[in-house]
Amino acid sequence: MTTLETGLRVSKNKASASRAGFTLLEIILVFALIALAASVIIANFTTFLNFEDRVDPEETLRAAIRSARFQAASGRGEATLRFEKETGALVVEPGERFPLNPNFAKESRGEIRFYLVPPAEGMGPFPDAVRTQLETKEVRFAPDRSSSPFVAEIDNGQGTPVRLVFDPFSSLVRSPE
Image (cartoon, rainbow, N blue to C red; front, side, top):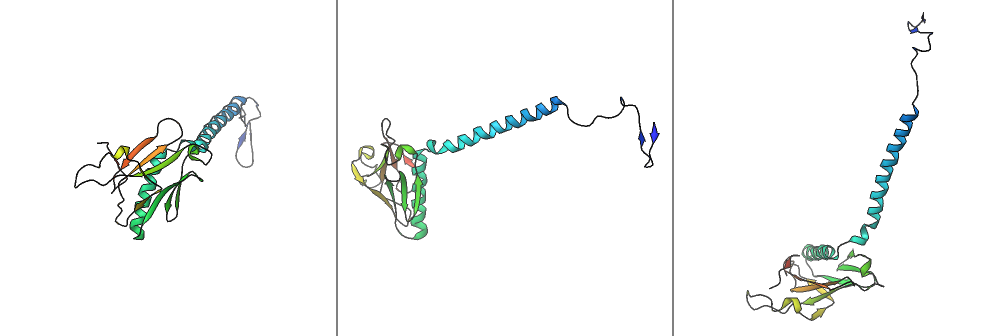
């Protein structure tokens, strides 16, 4: 063993010298971990890309109703909600769009229709709200955040359409009477 000018001792014996670098096993482990992380990231990214296909039209409708009520109250004017078949979106005037899934696109069969509910007498229940046939192209919301009682029919083009009776003062769905 020799001592350098810096005070370090250096061994001339190669067996006792420390080895620098990585083993083949360590390199393979690192590549395996990187591949595993990449596969998780790619799987999550493709799920994110397909998210638009799973947009729930009922939740989108509720969000559009909340937005219309808010816009009417904040703008101190009337706001309207309608379904636009050309773009496959719910439109709140003034100026907000709520895109729906591809079942509601122009070439598809999906559609959202609105029906007005006949007025109730006093505090009594709305007459036959679920089966109303008074179709309207748009629902109007007043500055006090109220609307005429209405029913929204969601027809995604597959199976039986779903009818939701909305409360005139909130975005809550009324239970059938």
